[in-house]
View: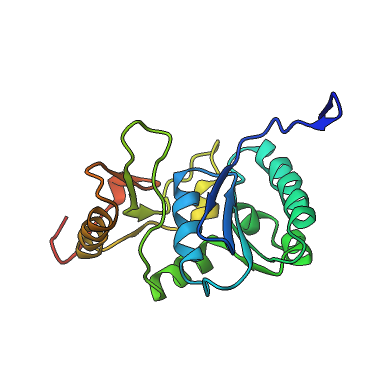
Length: 196
């Protein structure tokens, strides 16, 4: 929307800067931010790149994704553009034509699992910054009003020992004492080693 000679975005997105070369944008939830930061950690930190993790939970997000993607391509023409996430699952052909690299949620899961890196996100909007750790992803319900099961796949739990290690590492690195555990459907969390 144009107003008074300047562009006003009426949409919601998050922005994180990993370093001077890599920036993250997302139109999604905390899970999207977490996944984008984990993915960014697998990149060569000297690479000039934009990581854009998309959401398509609601119809308006598709419009937001396309608008933000076009803006990012104009503002950062010299950076490699990685587009990830839910809307890539939903509209892969569209993103393959525009982005340098695309990854669906399932591909993203594999990349993150094979390249464990420290989570780089914090919740800076809170008075007390926190560590965000994803412990579960996916959903086995097939609710008629929701497409999450199609976009995030079947439930997958992060092993308990991995969660504990990430929390310890984050607390040592950042000094925060607040931890937020995230997931799509917590009730499906299971670790066979500890039988819970």
